[in-house]
Image (cartoon, rainbow, N blue to C red; front, side, top):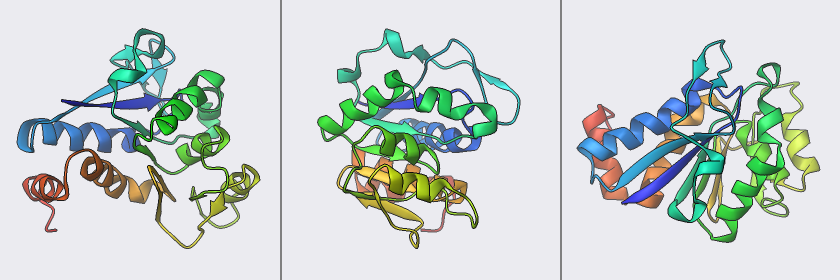
Length: 196
């Protein structure tokens, strides 16, 4: 069984987290049944971006990172204090740990900024939120990332980053493919009603 760590910062965007829980949940019941997703936070209760609360399955201090095979990180909003957790040393250390082990890391939208701040994307390629007149891509460049502004999703070795919430499903399916297989991912998509 491969274990996926869904790392949640306070102020995360629930839609971006739900694609991971849904796709890996479908895989557990309707796919090759080889994955387990565990949501983990820095607090017993997390506030989501849009004003409701979430109880993660585990606390970061309770888990052994070596038990996990991949890392998934949803983005969030500054107005909901997302960066307080996402830029904390505890959070960044998890990202560094997964990268040092060359384990897959999937970050949606501004979660890519935490990946960049951790240092693992320095002199590598990535992307983050790219809406016009928004500072996020420039912030990513300041962390030494080769930002691919024209791409929805950027994959550099073990790290997947993306440019908006719109990419969420594609990022989660790509992570599923990395930890299982392309054939299994196609079958999970089919069972979920996606045409291809």
